[in-house]
Amino acid sequence: MNNEDKKFYVLLGAPGVGKGTQGKLIQEKTGYSHLSTGDLLRAEVSGGTELGLKVKSIIDSGELVPDHLIIDIIKHRIETDKVKGFIFDGFPRTIPQAEAFEAMLKDEQAHLDGVILLSLDDEEILRRLEKRREIEGRKDDNSEVQRQRLNVYKEQTEPLISFYKNKNILKEVDSSGSVEEVLQGILNIL
Ligand code: AP5
Image 1 (cartoon, rainbow, N blue to C red):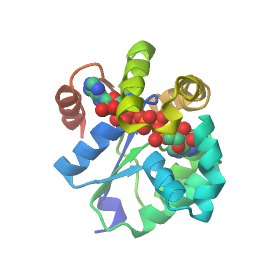
Image 2 (image 1 turned 45 degrees about the horizontal axis):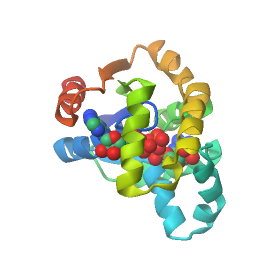
Image 3 (image 1 turned 135 degrees about the vertical axis):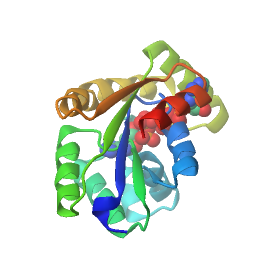
């Protein structure tokens, strides 16, 4: 399949809003590849790779991994994955990442079809992350790092909302409903 025929969607939203949960379900429903930069980085950390060793302490502190490392990972996957579409989760996360993404897609004669903003209030986000910490024990889900991740989101990722609004490709889905309700809201857009 040519890249220009592939679909490219981004799930945007704060940590714990449900991007990973929905990304997996969308992959099942549509056959698009769910690409979570958080999952990819955690796999590098648990595999003890050179990249994993570089990024472990950054992830554990709730800060963002340097843009160029993330951009390289995504570029490689766009060039090599043989799929009919992508659903990005956790990427782009900064304006420089969004600009690099745009350039990458242009090089591939492709374009971004849509950005889906999942919205939820901070209280419910922290409740969901707390619950996940009890179940999964993710190191960056402890309460201090959770707050830091939310701050980083507001400072570095929220500007992407205006960035994509200005391009008329941003759609918002309320993430406070059940997993099934949120999924339906997203599928109505895709
Ligand atoms: P990443 O893994 O991307 O973390 P995140 O964005 O903080 O997102 P989370 O995985 O915490 O939450 P989610 O929105 O996927 O929610 P989930 O579906 O799990 O990134 C981790 C780190 O990697 C970053 O801090 C950074 O260091 C680095 N990184 C990653 N990408 C990067 C990038 N592009 N640039 C630089 N650094 C990068 O849901 C949360 C919980 O809620 C779950 O338990 C779930 O079961 C539950 N839940 C979900 N939906 C519902 C619902 N509708 N009702 C009730 N519960 C629900």
